[in-house]
Image (cartoon, rainbow, N blue to C red; front, top):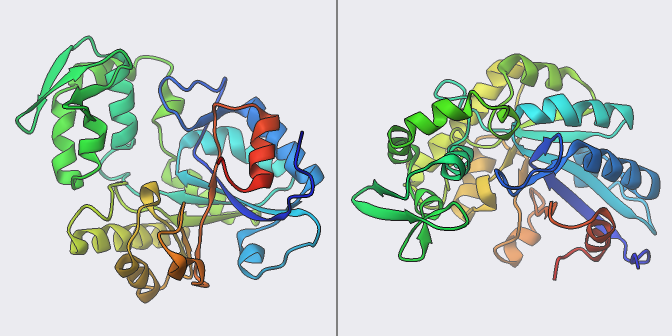
Amino acid sequence: MLLRNRYGERIIVFHGIDQKGETRFNSRFVSKVYFENFIQYISTHFNVISLDDFYAKKFKKNTLNIALTFDDGYANNYEYAIPILEKYKVPANFYITTIHSQANYLWADYIDLVSHISQKTTINFNGIQFMKNKKSEFISNGISLKSILKTLSYEKIEVIYTIFEEEWTEIQKKSLNDYWQLMQLKQIEEINKNKLFTIGAHSSTHTNLIRIPIEEAKNEILQSKNILEKICKQQIDEFAFPFGYYTNELIDYCLEIGFKKILLVDYNNINEKNNVFTQNRFVINPYITLENQIAYLLRGSYY
């Protein structure tokens, strides 16, 4: 039974939208049918507002107030989500990873895809041997390759591309573009011109900013801001942390260089909860029914 008396405010974060809700390649994607049903439901039963209005606390009483965000900058957002959002006149904010000059995919999606199709049973990375398990993950001493890569700078992550060159060539021949292709620069520019939507930054290469040297992390943040400002020809004042990982020092740096809205996933402590510039977000779960998703959304937690 839906918890209709549970009201409040939620910023929702989506990642990818695909044709059928395939979770083998990416555990954060929902189908375009699911997405439209979700948008139709929340726009009918709740108060869906822009992130600007959310920050300004322009909430309605006795209902759930919702703002929508999308992380990473997938081309599937442009192809599937944008038309649905326009149909229901629902505003949304898109946080873009500006890796375009180096690749048209994110390293994490690359690992998910090549691991799934690779016939290799073992690989060697950084002198560590990884074995493929039944879940199509490469594991060493109980730790996945993807978890190891989350601790490295992009320069060190790039080495992995030489290990799976054949697999990546094969993937690009398959109908899997929805699971890795990023928006083109002209698509970002087009979205930015639409009054319903706002573009924000999401780092340069989607590394874990709290595990790399602080100056490198700051450069990731600043570069993404500068690149998007050139594309959009206006100031970019919103930033969403990759993986939701952040430190107070990085938040301070974001404020220092002109970001006014800083999006997290979960708060590390009470300080950020009281910070007028930071907001946590509710991540959509692709593995549950729409009814259960709405129930958890009303509850404000999966626990």
